[in-house]
Length: 263
Image 1 (tube, rainbow, N blue to C red):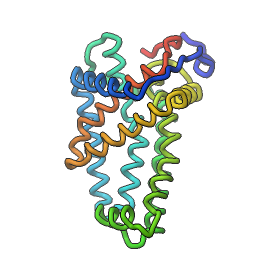
Image 2: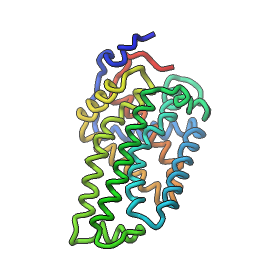
Image 3: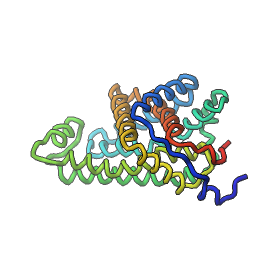
């Protein structure tokens, strides 16, 4: 059994440099995992779709709030995917396709690392929702109540830099969240490691692959936006697909074989 300090002072973790084309392999392997074990993934995707539909209903006439809420949800979504990392991990280890209850066991373990990280992501998401809503309601030239208003008043207003400022602020918040979580969360599921060491490893992986990880972040955003077009129904498939693909991104980016495995 690992000594408690092993989590904060783990053996060296190798970080690999990868070409941007590698993300195609992540998507292919993620899709393969989803097809091999579809039920947990599709139920996670259905939950994401239901949550998105609830956001639309609650903020249907307040798009200034909905725009921030949806983008804030993208910040928190990786923590929800931890159950699907377990599915990909077990498939990789040669185990059978696990059920929904087994995929959710990672939460029943009450892993303090995941709880702490989830709270931090929720705080970041909430902070962005409030910032986004304040920015749009304060500086928009007219009330923004629907998608058409957002496009006309915020995105296409040539006299204002509001949309550019909104994107820039969102990027300033999202970039460090992405860099901190893209490797750290699947690493928590896979190995025994402390929060600080996992986050630093995640940052090392991003800094060693700036172009590849920027392309990966844009790919995630692009697939998510496209999947939302048909009444959010595409999220049923896109959400678990991206979760499984993120597991394979982690496995290619770092070699954590020197750390004790999580069962």
